[in-house]
Length: 197
Image 1 (cartoon, helix red, strand yellow):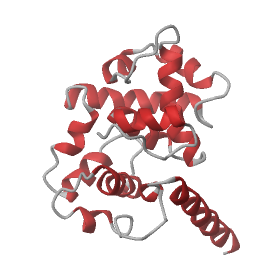
Image 2 (cartoon, one colour):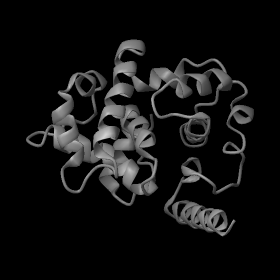
Image 3 (cartoon, helix red, strand yellow):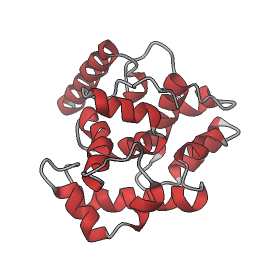
Image 4 (cartoon, one colour):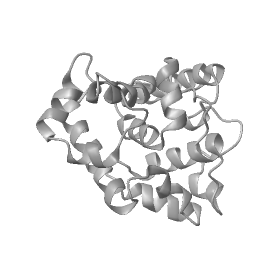
């Protein structure tokens, strides 16, 4: 992971966390559903603060999240402002994803993508996570390729159309504040087109 912040939210501290903590980035993608993109990707930072308010850790811990009391985790997600539109179900989903990271990848989220030999293998691993359908898996794999340089063999074909160059169609393309605005505009236009059908 780079030390440079990503640009997936409008909050610098949240962006810095996404840039240094693979699990935070993965959790942001888990939450990127039925809420604005920037809210989804800011929530891992808020989760970190809420789990250890006295002395916030520098990173999220998959084992700690997975073993956290489910009712307390749901309460953390529900605390105002809620970390998601559906705090209870998304708290459960985040814990389920963290349980897989803890048991299968030794608690290291980036082991999921760094050890994938091909783009298809990476897509399959992501698709096996709770809440990751084929489209979300492709978008996240494209984000890893475009912004973090994680490019296993065949990644571009495996992530099509999200891996294409020069597009502004998903979070994978948010590489700057300007790109953030372009992606938001594109998403708004696509939503309007769908509603018009």
